[in-house]
Length: 480
Ligand code: ADP
Ligand code: MG
Image (cartoon, rainbow, N blue to C red; front, side, top):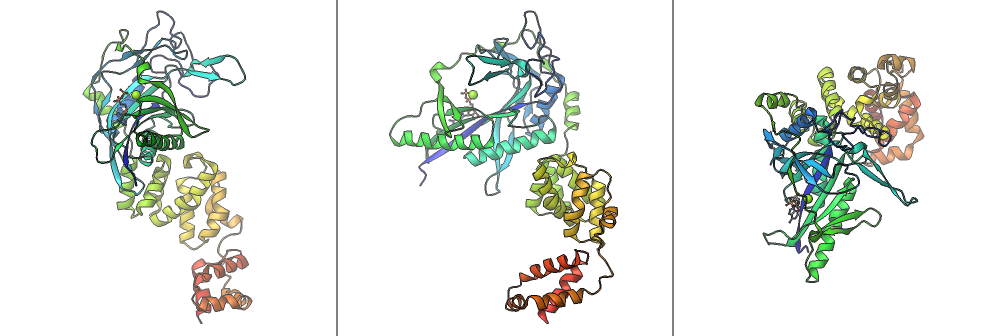
């Protein structure tokens, strides 16, 4: 039995997608050759001054709107002073006193699908540092300043997350939101989304929280989950022995799956925060806020609501269809165009999703269009081609070829249902003779064998028969 209750609070850094950096015109671009996006400002030459990026502010405010935070209309930046080789200025510009978004919440679903609300402390805007590169074989380290000055939002939750699964659900939800908003690519592998997890445990029934340990800078969902699990266990065994957990910062070791200490509270940096004197305080007008609010696109929760109520889609399917904005939009448009909602779900969740997973891409990165999927649904509805032939033989062409039209493909590849095959009965009779034991088993209650007979019949006829008629004929023959 569990004797301790874990509590988790997350601090999540999200790189914003902007053309230029947050305080200068250098490119904000991932993957450029090292040290190419660096002017004197990124390198903090004496006399250079920061200028705030308007888009970065708008991105942060959009996030705040979605999280129902209150937006600070008056704000300034603070210098957070510390020395590190990836930080050319010797301080980071951040918002200590006036975070752009205060409070708020995010809804997640736990492992059972139940809604939970995670309260936020704040979201603030800041700049990223450069990147140190340590190569195992060399006796020195290198630094790439391209990332120095890239805009970040840091989102801080209250200590209210109850377990590792919910922590990961929150991160997945966050990634989905920033992608829908188009404010970040949310790619953890690229470091666009990074997470510090604060973990504590306290005896069950006790109201006060235990001493927290912060595990820094993880960039995969799995690492976050493993690190939290490990910390809960480690802290449990400390308390078990009658000892106290030390409040400290730890790092997660990917290879061992364990965390190890980096620094204790005593060694905590004194950041000597003070307001950045080179930037005046900012005022965000109500008009500007209204304008930004208008740019918020349809969000996953709104799509889910629409899909369930307007298209009568099962909740689980609606969740799958809204995993990405591209897929949700595509599905919505196919529904509007075709009117056959059920077919649209089957196509997108079935064969289309398999293809996208296999190619690891979004639907708008393929050649499939709303018009052509709608046309494909239509010819299946008209019984001109069976679903299985359409999905295995026609769909792949629609993904790979820009212009191919479903009906033309059906004709060209000789896949259309051949109305002249009216001797389905003859084919069925042959099958019944070929598999007497299966027929007996079917009669004894193994109804699932219908599928096997269908498969055989489709093979014999090259799939060019009306599946409904075929299944009726087989059933009639088996049950006679
Ligand atoms: P610090 O001053 O060390 O940065 P904060 O109080 O600002 O600490 O909190 C930072 C993060 O730690 C937040 O996400 C918060 O939810 C989390 N946190 C605070 N106290 C606890 C605790 N006892 N257990 C777990 N997480 C906590
Ligand atoms: Mg902290």
